[in-house]
Amino acid sequence: MLIKNKLAISIVLGAMTAQASAVELGEFDGTKIAIDGYIKAEGVFVMPDEGDNSFEGSARQSRINFSMERMIEGHKAKAFIEGDFWDNNTEADSTYGWRLRHAYVSIDNVTVGQTWNGQFFATAPFDAGMINFFGSGTGSLAGNGAVIRPDLVLHYRKGGALFSLQDPLYTDADFPDLVASYTHRTESGHAINFALTGRDVETGDDESKFGAAISVASKLKFGATDLSLTAFTGEGAGVYAGWGFNGARGAATSDVDATGDLITTTGFAAGVAHQFTDKLRGIVRYGQVEADEVMAGLDEDTFKNTNVTLIYNYLPKLELGLEWRNQNAANRPPTAASSSTRPEGSQVEIMARYRF
Image (cartoon, rainbow, N blue to C red; front, side, top):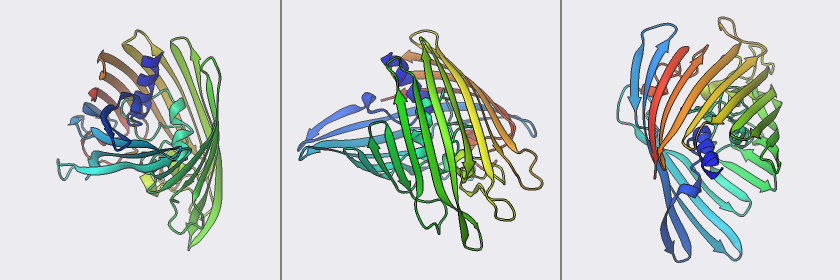
């Protein structure tokens, strides 16, 4: 069960970097220091519906992090910093810059800094997963990887409840983006999360409106098989989900129509993950997001994505993977570098990842 749980976290987040696998460097003046991360090499066969087929390769998803923990007057204090090589994400240069992913401090139940947003924690732990992620998956409240780690976030956790204040996506917002969620877990391993979100949404001419959304995410365990189901609906959530009035536009995804009225975005995802052996795991996942109104000229009002994945633990900490995925619209620009493109059509990825 421990192996299964670690692998599930690895696939879904790729990056949540569970400290259970960290290398302890030692204790210095009462502070425990550890290093963690992985090296990942990936090759992607790109088969767009329009245009020529291509093959792209990269190792820039590789990452490293450091954590420092100690007890201070009875309080558990932790500092964490992580980076990868996704900066300079353009075909103009094959030398990729170091990018800050996480930099936060936590004291007991409070975390502050740059790290995952509340939408991520409300969905990703309950998702079936994928190899090459962008956000926590199409159809979830956190499907847009461009906004999944705010510049500043404050989390407070109490039991199964999590309350989050986040650097707002709207520059002139009067208050932080808000997330409140609650997770219930059963003794048999089932889990369900309920989340509410709210944010100040720009409507034009320095005006704004409040947009709220609700999300439900669950993971049901049946022996060696996990069933993941998630759904959300509401206003102001399109930019976090990765699909809005103007389609998929990263942080510029619009939650208002041409007249400045809020649109409603609705999404759902379903996935099955099965542990065939102690080393081999398979995943089938489908997700979609629909905007109730889209701009003129946009071919689709619904973004759909499917992935079929196999992960094989060749050696402890060494994973080999194969993934087929298909989507009906582009959600990463063609100017994005190498294996990070997400055109309309199909892709097949092969990868090797070693965690240290």
